[in-house]
Amino acid sequence: MNANTNYIGRKALTLEQVEKVAPSIFASHAWEGVSERYTFIPTIKVVESLMSEGWQIMQAQQQRTRIEGKKFFTKHLVRLRREGELAVDDVFPEIVLINSHDRGSAYQMHAGLFRLVCSNGLIVADATFSKISVRHSGQIVDEVRKSADIIASEMPRVLTGVETMKLIELTKDEQGIFAEAAKRIKYGEENAMLSNLLLEPRRYNDNSNDLWSTFNRVQENITKGGRRYFIPAHKDEEGNYVRTKSRKTRKINSITEDTKINKALWFLAEEMKKIKTA
Image (tube, rainbow, N blue to C red; front, side):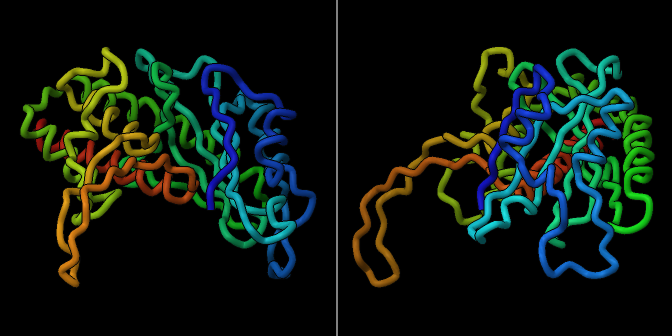
């Protein structure tokens, strides 16, 4: 399942823009078959509560579905940023809110970072900041607002980690190890793509050897796709000759996969930071 998305990142979205790309945020009731214990609170009510606290919507996204009528209830993601929050250069702290109205997800709150130069959103690994889950019961709006405050209070620590990554220089071998580990996370061990393709910069200023630049090059190449590689000519299991094939990596559209991959890559960067600062 792919996702509809409207990611600007440099300018807050209006509610009209959000509704066009993610109507499930505005659901007026839950998907059929949910439990009697399920407390329905439309995501938009939660979002508007956060907006009253100064948070602005920077991204709206939802999963596509082939089930008729379900697009108004499926999993969705909202990224929010508050003006005046502490930032590091072109990196801004965000809250990543994930929910659904089809029993597929509780309210999830993640710490996120937005990198302005590449309009790229990151999600911090649970090892750095554990996600906060709010079940569909009780005082959901109040719990989400409290969770937003907790995430905001932890952001200076996360941004300090970003500053540390910028100061850590990696050798070519270390960059190669990072890229190979990232490749295996996303594509598996047997994929024919050379991992150094993930190290290729998409802009001149990213062509640095520090850990932060390495992490961002790899993360952007994986999540945005578009890297072309070749599967060499070979014989299949039946002994038939198979000619060289060209392949191109795909952009990640799934909310679930994007969150999983982002967290795994952040964890990888944090572990490399620990090794280099030990």
